[in-house]
Image (cartoon, rainbow, N blue to C red; front, side):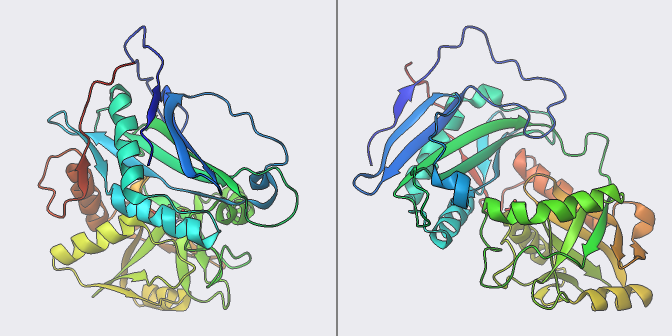
Length: 361
Ligand SMILES: *Cc1c(COP(=O)(O)O)cnc(C)c1O
């Protein structure tokens, strides 16, 4: 692979991170960009100023949605070190997603290196309060200008960085979720397990309709029988039954969440009975009526853990823990965030340290 080209803007003033960061509203000064062509493969890796792109309106991505993305986070630990949470797992998933939509894979190690370089340059943009982080959004799209349907011959990979605030600035707050039994998001052997914009396009209308009825998000059922629970728009789902914690097993239509994987590992560390299996919505309702459901929570990079206070299926409302966050949910949230800021031992080596270098501009 070629060397990364640095086309940096000199900072006249120190970085000022805005207050009330929210999610995905602000961006850092630089991006990483790289191009692909059939002749040259991936080439021209550059870290440069964030600017608008100039793209031909015939670009294939606009018409046929050939794209993939990732979402991961960097933190500044209490000791001042810069770390990224499980980057190799996210890069692996980016390549898995890419394969599924005919996008050429990227060298894992090179992308990891590029990510570290970009974050090292933008380290002053990493907010340091608990819950805050630098959100990392790598994405790839087909850029040929051609209106026939086929895989693009040219691609662009970009890594955008966005400083983000705590997901729960006023404390951990349970969400209200509608079980979606009209639309489906994905089907087995379709695109559900890949992080591609198409899955989000498929979910928007259901999400909007649920919001109008007062829900935060929807819980998707399987696309074939609409019987098994799958996941929540941007999160994987866990059900706390009396004697076991259950999360739907990965069946091809569920996104294999990195947070999901981390939570499964932590629950096992704690000796909690965690099972990956099929769960029908009827089982959840029946067990709820029998008093055997202690609660429900979601997992994802953005919120980390999201307590579900209410779950509504065909008008039947299940309330968990009187709408208060469950103890296990809070404990998991604290455990993962404490790892992020280096406050407890990183016993599974989930943090990758970014070597901070001074790069000549
Ligand atoms: C990204 C994503 C998740 C969560 O995955 P994490 O790796 O934990 O952030 C869950 N569901 C969908 C559909 C997603 O796109």
